[in-house]
Structure formats: C-alpha cells, structure tokens
Image (tube, rainbow, N blue to C red; front, side, top):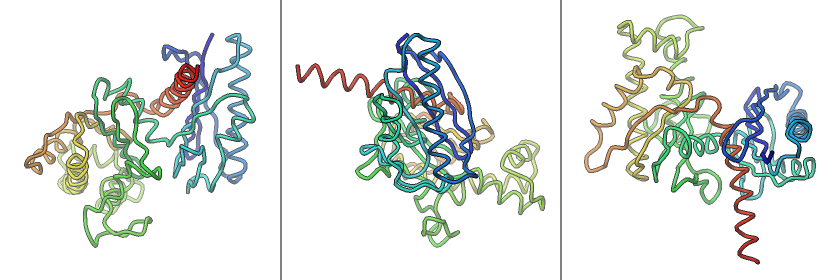
Amino acid sequence: MRHVIALDVGGTGMKAALVGADGTLLHQDRRATGRERGPDAVVAAILDFAADLRAHGVQHLGEPAAAAGVAVPGIVDEAHGIAAYAANLGWRDVPLRELLTERLGLPVALGHDVRTGGLAEGRIGAGRGADRFLFVALGTGIAGAIGVDGRVEAGAHGFAGEIGHVVVRPGGTPCPCGQRGCLERFASASAVSEAWAAACGDPEADAADCAKAVTSGDPNAVRVWQHAVDALADGLVTALTLLDPRTLVIGGGLAEAGETLFTPLRDAVRERVTFQKIPTIVPAALGDSAGCLGAGLLAWDLLNHTIDRSEVTA
C-alpha cells in the first residue's frame, strides 16, 4: 500500500505515523527523543525511528514508504533541509534531511513544527476551506503559521510566523530573544502559569489551574487571565492588520481552556479593531496530532511536486 512516513519531533518525545494517500493513518508509534543523552543521541534516535518505520511499511504494508516528512522544533532552514537550532534539543546546524535521505533511501521533506502543525490545521483541520488563515500555538512560547492557498509561508529566512516575539508591552518583561515586552512573555501558557503561581502563592499552580479559578470567579485569577488575554489581543490585532486572514486558529495548551479563553479573546479583539475585518476565531481541531499529520502532508506534497516537475521536464 502506497504510504509515507510522518514524524513529529518534540522537545521530549516523538510521534510518528505511516500515512496513506487519502490521509488514513495506517500505523502510529511514539518514542522518547533521548535528549538527556545529548544532541547526537537525539539525531540518532530520529534516524533509528525513521528506519524502523520504513521497515514496518515493508513488512506490514508490502512496500517501503514513498517519502518522509519530518517536523522539528526551533529554527529550521526548510529549503536546505537543515535543523539550524533548537534550545530544547541542543543541536545546531544538523543536516537532518540529508542524514534521513541517506538512511532511508527516500525523498525527505523537513519542516518547522508549528508551521507543519499549522499546515495540517489549515488544510484538513479548523482552517479547512479558508484561503488565508493564521494558526497561533499558545504553549511554552507562542509561534504562528501563515497559511496562503493551502500552503504555509516560511519567509525569506525561515522566521515567518514568529508572532510570540511581537513587542506588545514596550520596555516590559525581558525575553530570552533579547527584546523586552514580547507577546509570549505575557500570553503563553508558561507566562500565565508563572503569573498565577505568584498571584495565588502556590509554586506548583499552572495555567490550567488559573483557568479553573477563572470559571469559579476568583478575582485574582480573572485579573491574571485578563492581563494575558489583553496582551494576546494586542498581538493578534497587529497580525491581522498585516495579514488579513479569513480564519484565525488558536491551538496549544492555553487553548484547552475553551470558551474561558475564546469568549473574552473575541471580545478583546473586537474592541481593538477599527477598519480591519475580524476573522473567524476558532480553536484548533487536531490537537497534538497536528504536527504528525502535517508532516505527512509535507511528504505527499514533496512527492506531488516531484511528479509535477517530471511531467514538465517530459
């Protein structure tokens, strides 16, 4: 059965699937990255996992995968297939596409994890049918994916969609990127967790606890939550002013709060716009499978592009 390898590499774990041409998940698996053993061990784990997935296809589906798509975190040079930098994994300038191609004997597409997840959300998830969409993931940090006609824009240097580093509070909290007042220092899940832990006096409290306290009417929680929502709305209005998306898809851990987030967020965005058109603001639909599904789409796109080029040459 014709299929591709889809591999989503996270900070601590990897999710993978063998995906059929119609999007069917023919096989799924998970493994640890082994990052505690260093960046070389992580690369080795990725190569071994991919090789085992190829072998599974041969054994159980009758043929090897036709291609592979791999999503990785950090800074990614998609055009040259290089995993340039990832703080969580400790690597720099890893020629991952080349290494995987040599190991598998297959064409390989390499993508940025959030942009790859955004590709899946835009094409087969919450943004399906929208010609222009913006996907924003509210996790440990904040990152985005700019979708145009079924593809995701990487930018000239691979940095497109880094909405988490839009300055929303000039002169505010320092950010590891070197700026002060970046959006992710106020509206990421980790920022809300930090603020709520300080406000309630419990160092173990997190953003999910804050959301629960908001629903119960805790005034301190409401204050912390609204502070984050206001910052997020400021960043999103900047983005929609520049990009004019038809659909705005919000995912990541903070989005799991559901309408506790979306109701005040829609209100805050509405209060801030003047001439701009407000996009449809919806929660992501694919959950933590988005990156893996997106990696599968990258692989099929690579194959289809190769076929298109061969037809033109012929």
